[in-house]
Length: 305
Image 1: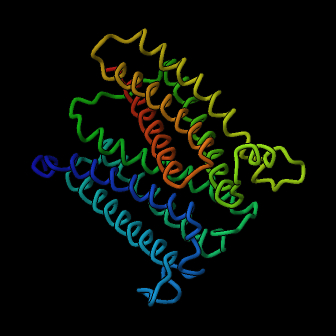
Image 2: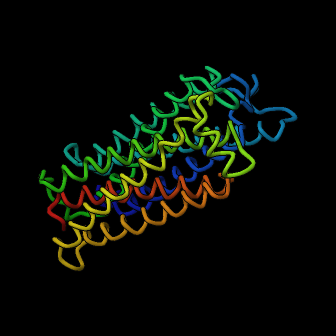
């Protein structure tokens, strides 16, 4: 059993990295309006296993489905390996189990977007709600995979103890989720209702006759600033109360740095009128912030080791 553990952490980190790439490719699918490239067929693509004479949007969507299918298989492998290498009471097993459950719900969420036509140019309330659910599930999924990799990499892990930092970090995590869901609506609005200039976009945002998705996207910057101030405060307190060299202190510094870069990226994204490449960078930084916060909360619950 011990031999089976030697390479498990490397595999788990690889699964996390691959899933992040799949998430970013999914953002590219949405940003390019290619979600309907395979029609309303799922898991088939336009009724075929392999699309014939595909258009570019079909190629983009089909590639995303293939990559998502591989991600599913990798998490299945992660679960099987965890059950073979670790005892029933192991936290690695529990994290891998949650990763598998969330991967199943992730697949169902993605399938529902296609089956119910909540893709491409759809502007319904249902699409906005499902996008929020999809993003929430995605964050929880990569969080579970992260903890699987992190805990398997540390044999000296101790039992968690809830403390005052955990309450603050739990609020920070929830706030980050809200911010990310608002960001998803903003990104959808940028895709569905593009503008020729920043001034035109601002005028569009505050127009009383604007679509509800446009009016919702103006909220995201204010949420981001508020969440950023709170996260910076919490991380700053952790830095001051944690000794140099400890992992929790390094993570707190990283959280502040990455979130600051993310805010700058958000501003650049706004000024450049949300080009696809900038949307993907912004999303990656949001995912990275989330993952760092998850690790920070884990470290503080273990006494800040």
